[in-house]
Amino acid sequence: MTNAEFREETADSHVEEVALSHLSLELGHLYMDDYLAGMDRLVAQFLGVAPWAEVARSVTAANSGTGRPRISTCFLIDDYFTQFSSPAKVLPDVLAAAEAAGLTIDYIARESACVVADGVPLAEIVAGRLTARPPRGANGRRPPTVEVGWLCNGQRSPGVDASEAMANPHWLPPEETEATNHSIFLDVELWSDEHGKRTWSCAFLASVWQLVRLGMIRNSGRNVVTPVPMSADFPDEWKDLPPVVRVADTASPFCAYRTQSVLPRRFLNVEHAVQVIVGQYSALPAVIDQIASRIGRERLELPADLTERIDHVFFNGG
Image 1: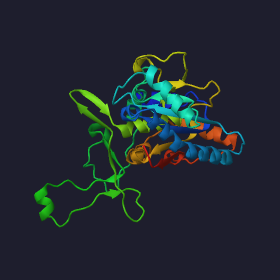
Image 2: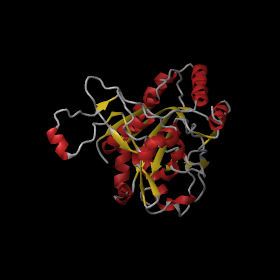
Image 3: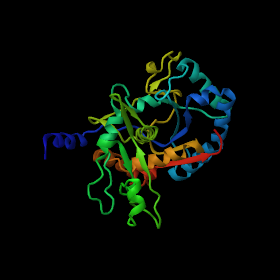
Image 4: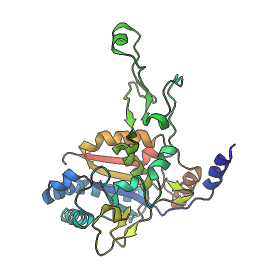
């Protein structure tokens, strides 16, 4: 065992616990096009979310064994791929649109904070804990994920050029590792490197977002995101906005045992990729044990597989 490995294992037994709600309910994402479409578009999207949010509350109440489950709501704003307007203009509109649809947002987060939050490199931490599952019959031909920035849920079709594909009758299709009868193969780009700059993919950042909400990421044993109470005035620059802002003083904890995201159908492909990425994330054993212990104390049932703690509802619209 190397010294690096020894330090990591030692750190596992001294990790900070985080407060947990029963459910982290995501009320949507906001991208520049959504905002530029105007207030009516924002209200329409929240109206599409509202009935599903009510169902989520009812189901969580039934499954938590308490009439008052801890549920927090959150909303993610893209300031990573596009910098549009300013928090001082955008956030009041978002909160007003949610209120017009009968919804309350407890927490607002920046997508760029899924890369770095308060100096903590969340994206790199998650990338460093991805453990690609070797497909059946793997021979090491495919380069490691850390080298190429791609992660899949099975075995790629062997690479051939066009002439070989026409001439070779022994072409093999890609194969999903845990397929049921037939494969649904997915190969996900996690990042791209151009001109010395790394750009993380939307699917990868959405995976970090889910893992943060599940309370599954630590940095040297410490929690990585602490919501900051909303100030009287939002800043003019996105970089000056805390990674996660707590809007409601009485909000339940930001992190939760389970997450649910209510999103327009256009997010379906991204969230499929999230399932593949999260399914190959290796959480710190001490974090897993902490949460398992708390589940026992609260007499809850929770799947061991992280992907089964993540639920989605996709609606037409947006």
